[in-house]
Every structure is written in structure tokens, then in C-alpha cells.
Length: 463
Image (tube, rainbow, N blue to C red):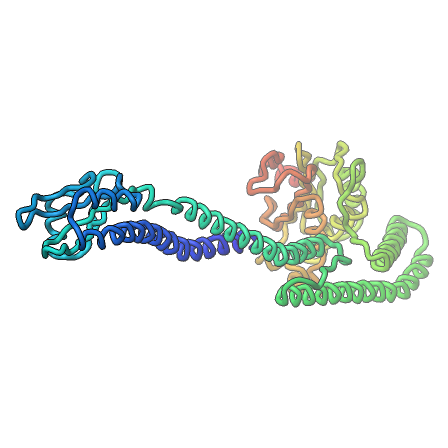
């Protein structure tokens, strides 16, 4: 906007200066020419009274000399009444031009070498017409014109520079509030909720700043209300959780009872984490710093051990691949566990008993891929399933499980995709980027080569 104003001001001022300077320069040149020929006319008029009285050469020479222009003046007297023609001074004009002036009886100017001449007719006492020729050099015609044009050019340049400077200052006054508005919007988009914009500048930008600040205040208020609602809802879960924890004490001993108590304890910890996170206004999934993260293989083995008991009760075949060696990822342990629980919970919730499932862990140079596959009926509309809050349409589905997985992957620069698995059902692929600077594109360069369908299916046949 700033440079646009400068360019417009430069163009307009230049056109205005040219519109006035060019005609004014031409007028100055004409004035200088008129001044030079007016002097020549005065010199010719000084000789005219003497010509009307006498045609004596000696007297005329003294008159011409007294005029001070004998070097640039010539007098042409025609012959008549037994008198020869008289030529005084140096003739510069052509004979035909002198004859034309004598015949017409009107003054005329004609160009000659080095300048121009004024031819002034004068009536003699004998009735003949004499012609007074006054030479006007070109230097006298253009005297002062160059200086005047230089002054005009300097004034025009000063006007142009002044207009550009004024336009630049006006542009700064308009652009500075606009830049502050852009910076405020960028900071607000980055999560800096305290970002506000000074309400100054032109009226339109000032109103935009007022609207932006009002919007930011509403966003902060809405987020605060959402955090309070999440904390309140989570706090309400403590009462039924307390009842569940007390009831687990009466289950006695055994693997199922221990797993139930462990699940209740974990659920209590998750609820406490939700309440604490909501009160502290901190995101649940944050970018891990250097040295942070967890061992994805260990988390996969732990969560599969937890879900294996339920899988055996429902007659489901399952397998884990790629979790034999440590795999470090820049994700918090609790976040990865929550994402795996959400996907495995969907398998148990939305597939019939006896449906097989698998978890594959692939470790690449710049990314780690977690595949959760099943042999169920699949997902008809993967895009709708990824939309937050839609779910699968079945009872008990809120659609937040896949959103948890998506936010986990996107926190590292990765993504989540849903497709068909080699088992015939659904495959959810979590792409966890190890280097956040590396872009995630189509095809994912540097990714690990996927296991061929035949090998994975054969592994299930052997389970």
C-alpha cells in the first residue's frame, strides 16, 4: 500500500508539473524572442526620422553610428530622381526579401546565418521606400531562456520529490496500523491469546483494530468457558469413578480383577489430567523438546498387553510387529497411549467378536509409522470419520477418538490416514514425523517400505 501511494503520487505530480512546465517554458522562449526583436524595432525607429529628412550618406552614417548598431544595422535606399542607390552597413538579408518588404510596406523578419534580421520599411521624402535592416543574433534571442528552463526543472523536481515524501509519510501512517493488525492476527493464530492491536491510524483501520480486539476478547472468553466446562464435566466423573474403585475391591484376586483395578486407576489419572490441563489452560498434546518423547515400541507392547485379555475373552486373534526394538518418537508417553487406546477401543467397539486385529510399528529415517489394522467391515466414509464430533454414526461414538489421534500426529508435523487393511477391514496409519522441519507430502519420501499383504495375512494364519 505504501509503495502504491508513492507511485500514484509520483505519476500525478509528474503529469501536473509537465502540464504547467512545458507551456511555461515555451512562453519564456517567446518572451525572450519578443524582447530581442523589440530592441531591434527601437533601433530601426531611431534611424527612421533621419531617413525621412535626408538621404545623404555621410549624415546617415553618423546617425547609424550614433544608434550604436552600425555593426548590426544596414540601410538600403533605392535609386530615384537622378540619385544612385545607397547601401549602408553589411547586408545579411536576401535581395528578394528586401524587395518584398519594400513592395508590401510592412515590417518583416527573416532568418539568416547566425540569427535573424528585422526588415523595417521607411518612407523617404522622395516617395521611395527605404529598408532598414537590423541583425538579431541567436544568442540574443535565447538570452536567459536556458537559465529559466533550469529554474523550472528544479522547481518541478522539488515539487515531485516533495509530493513523494508526503505520500510516503501518508503511506507509513496507513501501513503501520495494517502491519500491526497482520502481526496481531498471526500471533493470535499461533496461540498468543494476549495479542492486541493498538486502535490508531485511519478510520477504517482503527475500526478494524477495534473489531480484531473485540474478536480476540471473545475468543479468550470462549476458550475460558470451554476449559471450565471441560473441567466441570471431568469433575463430575469422579463420583462414579469412586464407586467403581470401591466396587473393584470386592472382585477378589485374579488377572481380570487386577486389570479392572488398573483400568480404573488409569481412568482416574486421565480425569485428573483433564481437570488439571483445563485449569492451567495448557494443551494436552504439545511439541516435545529435545530429548523428550517416549519409546513407541514399549508403549505398543504395554497397551497390547492390556487389550489382550479382552481380545482372548472375545476370541479375537491379534499380533504385534516391529515392537521388538526401541523406537524413540517426539511424543509424550501418555499421548501415544491415549491414541492407541482410542484406536484399539474402536476395534473392539465397532467390529464383531472374533474379528482379528494387528498393530505394526515401522521405524524410518525421518518418520515412524504406526498401523492399526482389523478384519472388520471397514469404514464407508473415512473423511466423515476424521471430522471431529461426527463419529461413525453408531451408538456410543463421539468421533473424538480419531481426533485425538490426528492431533497427536499433527503435533509432530505428521498426519493420519484411513484406508483398507490387508485383513479386509480398516487400516489407520499414524505418521509421526521425527524431524518437524521435513514436509509431509504425497507419498512420504523417506518412509519405510510397507509390509506386503501376503506376509501379514500369513502371520495371522499362524496365530
